[in-house]
Length: 502
Image (tube, rainbow, N blue to C red; front, side, top):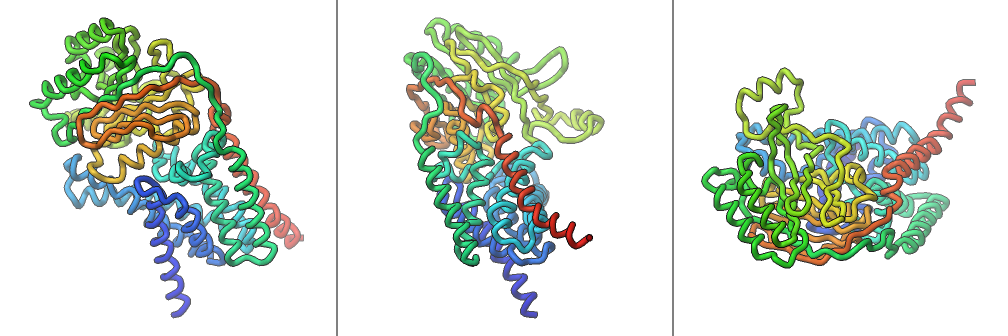
C-alpha cells in the first residue's frame, strides 16, 4: 500500500514539474526553472523500475504540454469552428503524443544505464533527451514547440546557440539538471563529478558569452514591418477585403523613408491572380519610390491546379518563395491521395495547400539575400539553414491571430529570437496581429509592436555575413556527441553482460 502511494505520488510530482516547465518559456521567461524542475524529475526516475520510469516520464510530458500548448484549443475551436468535444479530442491526442515522447525518453534511458547515477545523470539522460527532442521535431511533420533550448534565450546558456543550436542548448540544460541532482543525492565522488560539470560548463560559457560570429556586410537598410491588426474571425470575410487592402496600402504610403517594407503572411485575404491590378499598383509605387515590398499572399498555379502559401517581392526586384513546411490539418490533410481527392470535393477553403519545393533560392532585395520563412517554418532551424550563409538577413511572416490572446505568440517570438541568435543575423518578423518585431543578431528584440493593433515597426538593420558553427555543421555535432555519450554509458553494461555470459 505504501509503495503504491509513493508510486502515485511520484507520478503526481512529475506532472506538477512538467506543468511548471512552461514558466521557463516566454512570456514568463523563468529560464532557471528548467534545470531545477528537471533535476527533480531525474531524481524521480532514478531507481524506479523501467515501466514506472516510463509512466513518470509520460506524466511529466503531459503536464508540460497541457500547460504549454493549451492554446491549440483556441485555434481549433474558437477560430477553426470545431465542436468542443471534437476539439478536446484533437488537442488531447497531440498532447498525449508529445507526452509519449518523454515516456520514451524515460524508458529508454533506463534501459541503457540502470543503477549508474553518474552515467545516468551526466550522459544517458541528456543524450537521450536530445535524441527524442530531435525526433519530435521531425517525425510526423514535426512539432518542435517547447524544445528546452528555446527557454534559455535570456539565460547564460544562450551563448551556446550559435555553436550547437537549440538541441545543443537542450542537452546542456539536462546536463546541468543531472549535475544538480548529483549534488543533492550523490556520493562524494558523484558530487565531485557534478560540481566539475557545473564549473567547467560555467567557464566555457563565459568564454563564449558576447562573442560575435558574423560581421557587417554592405550598407544598413531602413526597414518597416506592417501589422494590420485584423482579428482572425474577420480576416477572411469577403466584406472586409477592400478595407484590408486599403489599410495596408495606406500604412505603406506613409513609409517613404523605408528601403524595405514587409507585410505579413496572407496579408491580402485573396489569391494573387485575383488581385493583379492591386499588386501591379503596389509594384509601380515601389519602383517610383525606389523601395522594395515583400508581402504574403496565396497563389494558384493554373497549370497544376495547386494552391501555395507564398511570399512575393514587388518593386525593383521580383521574386517568389513558396512555403515548404505546411501545417498539418491547417494547410493540408496528412492522408493518402485518394482521401485527399474526396476532401477536395468538400470545397474546404485553402486547406489543400501544396508545399514549395526544396532548393528555392533566397529572395534578393537591394543586393541583399533574404532567408524567408512563413509562419511556423521559423521553428525549424535546419530549414532556414538552407539559405545560409548566403543570406544576410532573416525574414519571417506569420499569422498568430489563430491563437488569440494566449502565450503562443510569445513562444513563437521566442523561437524567432533563437533563429537570429544561432545564425548571427537580424530577424525581421511581420505578423497579422502580433508579435511583430525586429530582432538583432544577439537574439534581442530591439523594436516591437503592440498586439491586435494596426502598427508599423521601423528600424535600421545591418546585413551580416559569415557563418556560425551551427550554420556550418547544423545538428551534426550535437547528435554525434549524444551518440558517443550513450555508447560510453552503455559500455560498462555490455562488459558486464559479456562477463556473465562466460
